[in-house]
Length: 193
Image 1: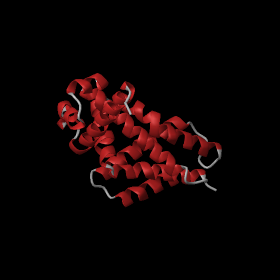
Image 2: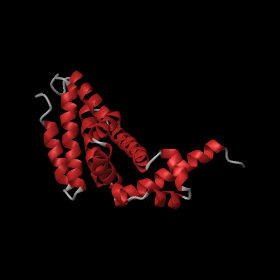
Image 3: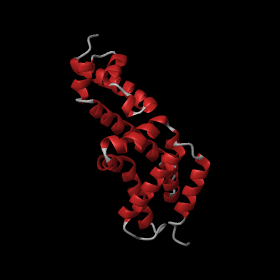
Image 4: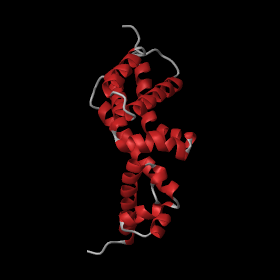
């Protein structure tokens, strides 16, 4: 059965994303050569430039993909619970645990803030994980589980703390100790019952 041009383009794009993701996670942005990625993906360097304009453009697409998957992973873990508080804890723990994933560690936590710049990296984080966190905190405040307060600064503080803890775990910190610290931090948010 013949393959359409659109299907060929998408297959080329997917192959480039998969190969570059593997290399960015294993070697870091600065050690990846676009021509080698293209060759390993079975396409020409010109095809890589056609789809992504540059190595930075390819990296940006990989970051979006990893960021989206992480946001979905966090949401899936949170949705396993009915209780709003347990949803928050599960989502935060899932993000923290992601620090052990080589793609998350190298691509999102180490390279993305530097390569893309802080503002772009934060905007991508806002579109995925941070958005879920703000929604969870809003629901908790509305339910009276945490104090009624402006959610945006609280979400940013908590997001920053969790990002730093995930990076700490990625660099060899003990995941269990990180989880315990997270639980103590979150417990401080609860209103007295």
